[in-house]
Image (cartoon, rainbow, N blue to C red; front, side, top):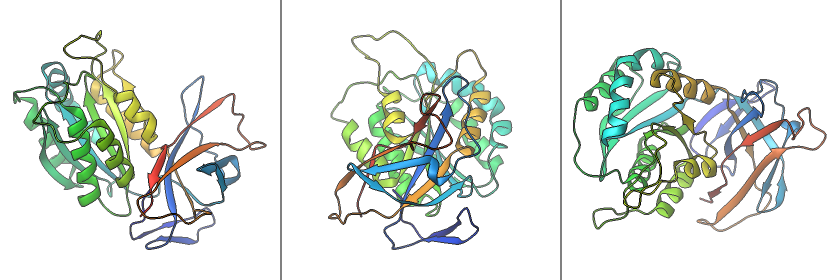
Length: 297
């Protein structure tokens, strides 16, 4: 959930302000199951929202009107770094899919995250920041629960308040186990993502068999519980997948509602967004991606 100051325009053109009100904003993607393409004709009455099982009234719906705040998070293990080297060559073209108001920060991680470039709207600066770690060799394993927590924390503290927040994450999905050097667990990372209102959008660089020393990670789980979308390279160029991911973010809707019930600050509220019975879209043909909940402020 996000309650930062800012304004957006509703379907009827009336400004909708986000400040100290109780408006809960959720990022939603509705995809056709057969083609995996999004719909451009969504209305408020086509969706229904439950918060802790209680129906909510959607008072706000927009598409691609709020700016994006993106942390590009890169795994520095050997497998992912090879993909990052390829991305460095085509990053400039992929970044043209962003709007001028969208801001991007760049982080890399091994045992911990390291900020390469702070949030900026300068695409050349971001492309240069992506090229910089491509030639580096970061020692240590890929502790991605810690890295995702740090990326979400960066979004919470430094991301544009009115923006939609995203951790765009290149990973081989093979994390190391916890060590004394890691501070935050998977549960901590999920909480920080929910607190910041960020969704996780992994680009999976490798689908290797699970190994005892490096069991397969939960990048797909991060996407599922935050309403994000995991994309596999699948033989495509990594810059093409990055462009696709940005275009899919552009296709997402933002919906807002005012909770029907008061709850104490710090309460986790479970949210379920689905297609409404009698709406224009048939649930058997479409799927809805949205976050699993948020923390009350």
